[in-house]
Length: 173
Picture 1 (cartoon, rainbow, N blue to C red):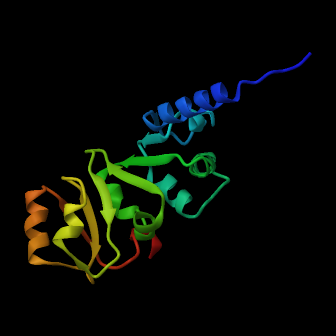
Picture 2 (picture 1 turned 90 degrees about the vertical axis):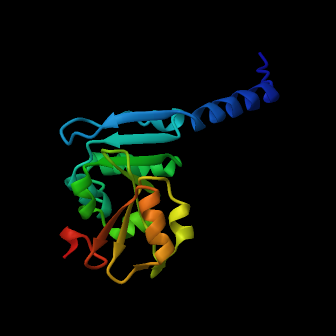
């Protein structure tokens, strides 16, 4: 018996699945006592939104605590090139380490659907803020300064500014 594989058909199916995946979003709710969703999610969805993210999960993720099943699951999803959006209470933004905002391949959103972002350079310009979505929450330190044009645009785009006293978040002190 000879197995015949139509390579063109197979490639076409794989490309169609990848194209479909790019536009698929999976939503789940974090609960420490509930098991994580199946890893099959990573094959079918390019974006995963996790709501109800706790400060406990943030700290475990920052510490790469792979004994935490949610952390291990998120890290595995990153290996699959999944974009994660972690939705949390606006007051919990103070607990997101600045390094996570700047360097991690994860997006943070408040429960009011505001994208949380930070910038690394000392002077925040109009161009920096223009590149961000309206109503974003921008985290800066006391060492960073906004230009006059940036301040005007902040109001025009209905953005919020959260100033931290230093580089570390509350629990890193």
